[in-house]
Length: 404
Image 1 (cartoon, rainbow, N blue to C red):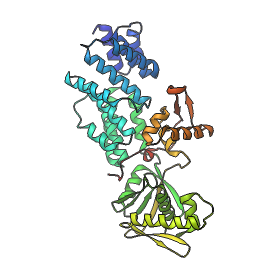
Image 2 (image 1 turned 90 degrees about the horizontal axis):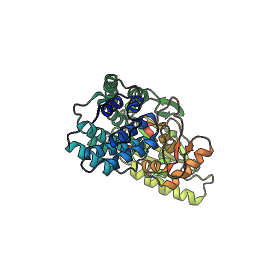
Image 3 (image 1 turned 90 degrees about the vertical axis):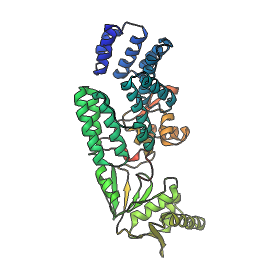
Image 4 (image 1 turned 120 degrees about the horizontal axis):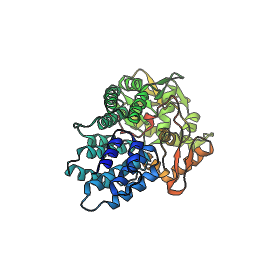
């Protein structure tokens, strides 16, 4: 590596893409192309960055396996920032193995963190934990990334004390790295813990909760109908209704009305969306209530009353409903878009576990309402929306069920 290339690499490592470009902007040799690609990625021109990195990867010879692996890692990072979650993970894993085999532990660690961040976006938290592994001695910038990933896992596990500890470590490492963009990312992550993350509905009243308050609620003796993850909690026991939307609608209606009951007509409207509760709907309601009663049997009973049904917890003395901070149609799609990044419809479908056509219909409806907008066309089309001030959508992201 010549002196200019080495100086450009040091500039990039310090978070100075313009300084790097000043040294290699007019060069087309493979190392310069790779450095230009990384610099353009740091400046936000992801399309040009990807093209430059691919040119560099093709230009490196067969004997330059490490250089080609580094290009693959850089391209994977661009894919992550672009929310291209369908990017081939096997290519990144192979690149990481090549880097480890050749002793490039820093870039190998960076590749591992990229895969962990991708897994977190997909809601595969347990797999992310396994992939993360134990921290090794790393430069300050990568220590910051490691702690941010640890904090992200803790937040999705609703372990706020561990998250705050990891973020404190990340702040110290970012200060040591002296990279402004990294410091800003840590500060943004820290603010998540102090923003409303859910609403508590109890006795006809509502109030906002922070993540630590949500954690305390789920650890309490209250019977919690969790509308953020569509589960029911009671003293450490969890019944998942994530795949049973009708049953969860019934459970939520009963939880919001506790200690009172809910009329049959109201339950029909909540569960089936019908304004008229004819005999066929009433029969269907009895069937669904029976199914709900079987699932909740270890936790509560669903008893019939003269006008409807009521929830009766077996141990808890209080029933509350935990709801997202903002609820509206297509809220799950909005939850991802409010991270401030641009998403493709295919990436949203992958993250949500839904069909791309379903996601596209939701995006079209949101666009018609002015809630989101798109840029580009065809495969390059991306959707985005400004972050909602004062709210975090962490609880709306996919997570393992039950919370462990």
